[in-house]
Amino acid sequence: MIRRAAVLLMTLGTITVFGAARAAGDEEWPSYGRDFTNQRYSPLAQINTKNVAGLTLAWKHDTRPAPVPPVDGIFKQESSPIIADGILYYTYPGPQVFAVDAATGQEKWRFNTTGNSEIRVCCGPNNRGVAVANGMVYVATLDARVLALDAKSGSIVWSTRAADGSRGYSFTMAPLVGDGKVIIGVAGGEFEIRGFVDAYDAKTGKRAWRFWTIPSPEEGGWWGSWSRTTPDGDSLPRNIARERSDSARYPDAWQRGGAPVWTTPSYDERLGLLYIGTGNPGADYDDRERPGDNLYSNSLVAIDVKTGKHRWHYQMVPHDVWDYDAASPTVLIDVTVNGARVPAVAHAGKTGWVYVVDRRTGKRILRSEEFVPHENVFAEPTETGVRMAPGIQGGSNWQPMAYSPRTGWLYVRGQHSPNVFRRIAREHTVGERYDGGFASPAAANRFVTTTAIDPSTGKIKWQTKTDEPQLASPLCGGSMATGGDLVFYGDVGGFLNAVDASTGKVLWRYQTGAWIRSTPVTYRARGRQYVALTTLQGLLVFALPA
View 1 (cartoon, rainbow, N blue to C red):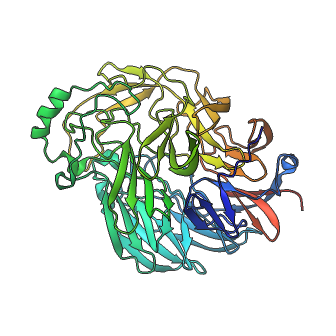
View 2 (spheres, rainbow, N blue to C red; view 1 turned 90 degrees about the vertical axis):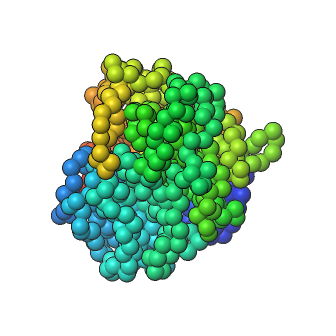
């Protein structure tokens, strides 16, 4: 049964969750997660459970002849469109930026970044989208620049270099614009960088502050409390005595400690806090030179939006040696704890659980039931190899989950793809990629899960599985929920799916002809509701027959 609890307060033109607001008309999708909560929920209901079977392709936009970025690696499309003032903006790896009429698909302009020839990226060229505000389109580049483009023409208004792309720093996330600032986090942890989140003045591009995701000794250090378990009590394979001894041998390891931030944060305007998920410490599997808990890696972190100062953190996996970084975007929700309504932040982990904490304090509320199987989890990687599940893809990876206030449930995409983890230590040079080993695919029945989870109890309400045995790494795209009681998502088999939010029953499917790694959005233009999805070939937009 669909619960219509009033966990989301609706006011005209604004979506509010316990003080976290973002101006957003029902028609638009003006930010990466639609609003500052990152819930990826739209109240639009023109397309609903009763008529979604009639959904058809309305139009498409072709990116060709967009140039291919001169970067080695896997070519991917994970861009999430933005819709503002009747224009749809999306990106193509590199990135290129496209502006098209949201009702017809007529192209208004396209912009191609340059100067990417010397960049170093871990996992191929990628870009997850733009932000739109102040008559400008904000985009971050693979060579670690932040650009503001004129929303009407696509011309550059300002450009700021944040870091050296040839050193391994890169940007892949869609920026967030809040409090007059463009918020962006850096990728590149495999190159032994020191992760950071930057805030730039939205009008001028001048940097307002930088938050380092690895604290210096003056800030308390990254050693932490030398935890022998996770916050949930899982035993960790650590030799604390050796680590304490090594802390004197490697006193400066924090300067290259990793902890990148490569998915868009959520933001509570009332509390003035940004909520980020941080990546793994470097190197991944070889932990000889990074004693301690390696704060603030593998954590949920609250940052003061005005000052960039640390307010609290919750480290889900101290001293990670499995690449279990907090990759999925944080989501702001309200949950019920002992009969009281509590403002919370939720995160779907690579570990295969959803974590829910109090967003005012960082205090743990719960860890959900597993949404993918666990096998030998948190075992120590060895030279001969140890089989574990989840593998390095998760669990949940970068793909965002959605939340529907109509059901009160989170919708999580996950993948079951076990790996054999091997630690292979060697001498290395800072600035070159170094993982300290590798995780190879393990023989298994691989599959993708779509799971509805009640964040107040952590219980699974329904789950579906899609077998993908032909793929060594079935990394999938994220989910989107609507007021029509639907959840949309794309799968690795190339289908865009619409399912009943209360049961998971598939009500509509469309074969796109390509592996879908992006996440759909919905909006209304000229009175008609559309569903949009990016692919490597461009943009597909669906609607009910006119």
